[in-house]
Image (cartoon, rainbow over all chains, first blue to last red):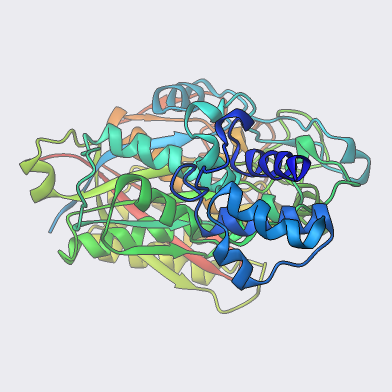
Amino acid sequence: MENLKKTIIKIIAKELDVPQRSIKDDTSIQEDLGADSLDAINIVMAIENKFNIEIDEDMLMEFNTVKDIVNRLSTIVI
Amino acid sequence: MRVVITGMGIVSPLGKDLEAYWHSLISGYSGVSLINSCCLNQLNCHFAGQILDLNIETFFNSRQLRRMDRFCQFATIAAKNAYLDSGGDFNSNPKENTGVIFGTGIGGISTWDNNLMQDSDPDSDPGMNAFTIPRIMNNAAAAQIAMQLNLRGLNITVNTACSSGANAIGMAFREIRSENLDSIICGGAEAPITPKILKAWDILGVLSKENTKNAVKPFDKNRAGFVLAEGAAAIVLESLDSATRHNRKIYAEIIGFGSNCDAHHLTSPAKEGQAKAIQLALHDAGIKANQIDYINAHGTATKLNDHVETKAIKKVFGKYAYDIPVSSTKSMLGHAMGASSAMEIVATALSVENDVIHPTSNYQNPDPECDLDYVPGKARPKTINHAISNSFGFGGSNAVLVVKKWKT
């Protein structure tokens, strides 16, 4: 779980060009980091490529905070 | 309604601000340089008009840069500088009466063609993501300019190949003359120095194989074609009422626009169409041919262009053609496609303002078919009350603007 979180934070930091340390469990990708719909697509693409999975649109809508993403993905990739 | 130029901005191989651009032009400098790339062995033309020392991070943050192709970056810098130059309002209030009309030939091609020539790696991943389409689309430049300055008026992108910038400025002129808007930021932008685009132009046989910084020799008997160039130029056109109300500085007045199509060939020009475009512009301006003091030529340094443009000028001006100085801006910076005509209108406006004509660089050997006064070698002082700027695009799309010295 901790490794998954680290990987997710690394992906978000790279896609949004922000320091990893600025991203916490309850950081909102949209509200705190300013991501728009285009950034969200890029983050999803990067996660899909990293874990070789497909994420559907419904799942995309559930993604807000880092915790949301980790919780949702933990059922698939762990 | 009279239409005046109240601001100008430029990002070019000859300078990244108006002062540097004008100094380079009248000094006859070359903005052409060797392309630094691993792909050169596949090309005949190894030189281009490149912008090499622009520190792009000083203009945009990383979030903005991810969303902008190189052509869009050039356009936005030039537009913001033109707006600043005009004394435009940078507050966050929406500006309902200011629009944007911008030209480009191939828009965000450097996003599509896998990075810049300088950085190209044939084995790298194309790297598509959610920003690919927003970066490629031709109207990204006009949209970014509007978003960054909060300009809520008409927002149009013009694509007529190498006359895109001139048609954008001409359409803006008509919009303001018709009193539809108070002001419009108009111009053109291009970033075509990419491996595939260079190769594709190479195939057309119009790029110089001379491979020196003096390779572009318009109207010279030993001409060898042009080199590609990149950059953007922007002009703030404003109604005289608005300019007076805001106490703007006025560079020059636009008084005529002629735009038409040869309806002849996708890439070959036609004398009749070009001559007609010049006549339309003169008629629109309400002036006679013998009132023109200077012609800023399309001047690409291809045999076909040089011969046809010279014939078109002679057809319109008759014997008076021999008394008009004709010079080519492309001789110094190459051909920036959709941006070039906007860069040339900036040069024309500065000539009209300063009464100085920049030279046609690299002109040494007269061509019997090109027997006009091409202002060889060095700049020339001359009182310029009226000038025209010729722009002729692939597809036979011609655009000619008449620039008049500012007098109340």
